[in-house]
Length: 504
Ligand code: ADP
Ligand code: ZN
Ligand code: MG
Image 1: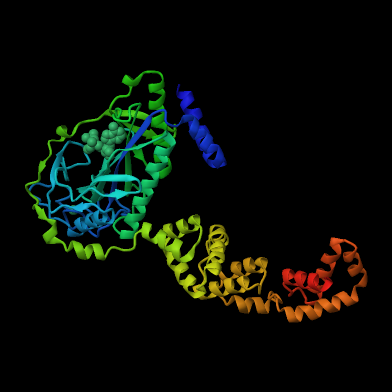
Image 2 (image 1 turned 90 degrees about the horizontal axis):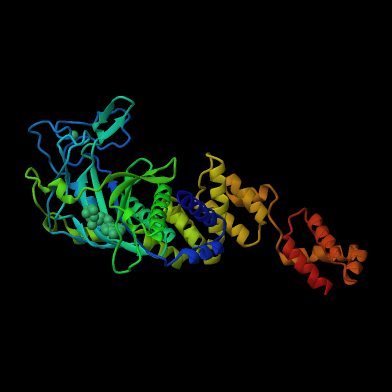
């Protein structure tokens, strides 16, 4: 059985990489067998200056352990928490960005459990009254977004463990989605990752979190289940330790296939509600523990923290107005204003600095056709150069636009364009100046080229006769002669057309 899972997993990724048409056949084969349901719980560390209940620095890059600590985040007796307004503001921004309702009343609760990374014996979180309820993003309904504190970090060694409290009390936002049902295991995995990536973009755009998954600043937990009844969910399994989008996609897919095969074999009872981890080395999920229920945590309102009236404490209308342009709106604007390919748009959406530069450059060009040409040179040539060489950087928008104008108006060849581009990304100079000094300008002036072409025709009666008797190669030799006469500066396409016109 396990082998089957692996085979299909391999087949799926193979198919995804190598063939798009293949995918749909592959999917047809497996689709609609069951209903595949997923709900996500995503944590993100908020990038505030200080921690959530004390004035310690919130520094995810601290080099030494236990340097950003104090009696509050170490839970010394008598230490009292003080709320960080910025953390609440950040969660409200996320709520507004996903169209959720901002609670008027909110409070913090104690979630009681023991672990060495929770020095108080409880984690401050929110239970009944989250800051945000509802909302929608990328195919998923959002249940809630609440605020809690991060735990410390345990480091395990062979015969001992260490605890680093730098992270203890860092503000952590948790977003929970409603269960969402898909038609296949692969669609579920892809849909979940699409959602998580879109949320990461929103967190970046809002400037509320670095949300780097590899650094644990954003953590995705996936709850999955499968069922053969569209009206009833199956038993859910929660998957943890997903340290990248890639592991998330693979783990979700793996787990759903595991469940699918148990159902195929009528072993549904073997699917139990539990937490499973993702083993990156083995590319498998494994059982970690049976899931505890919320009663086990004995949640109750924290008596040390104030209740909050958010509609009084914040000017929500103003905050809504002040939200930056979000990815979805930006995509639509790029599509409408520039008419460039979706893949290109996605590059600018994911690299807003490049996007801003592109917008400025597009404004100089002021013409959709030229903007499309420009975008091609950026997304293929410029990005290729940048990957190959660290010293490559964006030229000024003005110089880049000048280069695009030269090629769009046929003044330089596409070969020369690539060469000049490779120069201006290292040394930001005027492409016109480079083209002039290097003799790369093409003669497209039909008047001048016509005179040259006439001279070539008169001087080569044999080639003309050959052409007229049907020898296509004779035309090439005439074009070659024009190129030679103009020292390579003629635009070959224009020269060809003029010769054809003259030869009748
Ligand atoms: P718990 O009480 O175990 O934490 P919740 O009802 O709070 O469970 O849901 C936690 C997450 O699991 C949510 O994202 C929710 O959408 C998702 N979820 C709940 N039931 C299912 C299910 N049967 N299949 C997949 N996901 C589910
Ligand atoms: Zn502290
Ligand atoms: Mg829950």
